[in-house]
Length: 353
Picture 1 (cartoon, rainbow, N blue to C red):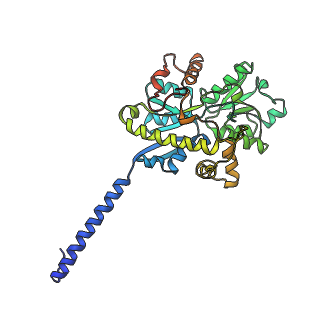
Picture 2: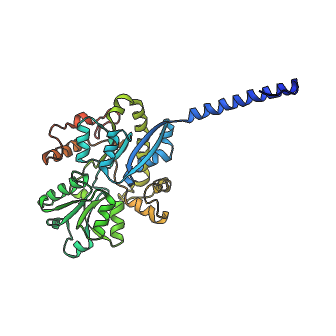
Picture 3: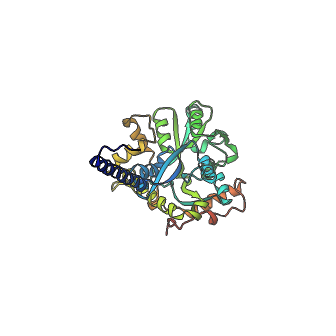
């Protein structure tokens, strides 16, 4: 109980208490007003995830009332599993056979696009190890009889090498697949000569080649232009938290627009140029990609890794359907998987619409 030394003192204490309570209530209200709906995002520490990093760092997600946390994974398949299990709410990464199987069971919904191989932009590179290159693996048409590193069987790497081999007139079965579970393992195996070849995004491929650790012998875009990956969420989120998904999509699209303006801008001759926002975006991406490198080393790598993304993150739906069929024909995706059941274009119109 308060001791009172007089009416004036009591009045002063009372006024102070009321003021303190009022200030506390105001502060609480301010915190409540700024507290966002928590969402967890699963991604790889690749330049291809840049729109997510931009959306978070530039406040686009916060502006939509979303308090976003980004979790970094080492390969594509675990990203899909994280969404399906509810450990993450949204993800962007390459499509895989495992992804399509999860989606076909009703766990996932594809709601937008990530990377798209395009002939006008450098995309995934086909690499040969130094040992294999010195032994004669100097071009794509010589891949037969050699080993190839990939994360998992049924991964996007599997899809790319299968299509590249077919288009190059090589029997895909003549290439020995080596599943190594993660991208770092793939890189290590190629650099040490434990495998002869691999396919990887340019922000990894070009530094390896420039450092003399491997040789670029071709580009996927010359063999199989395709929708590399997508933006996805759980079916439950689409059904029960549609407003949250719409908010996330708007923020993601702003990130894509910034990415395109800063890293894909070209001059009249089609050569990449630096825009007014390039340095700002490079600084943001550097927090997540090549974060341990100084800026002078990281920025060129990030620029080299800026693959094409469609405007507004529009998905090449027809190509995704073609991918599903490729996996089905080889037994990696169930025959009854129907892309129309897990591709949702209600948030972002399909490419061409």
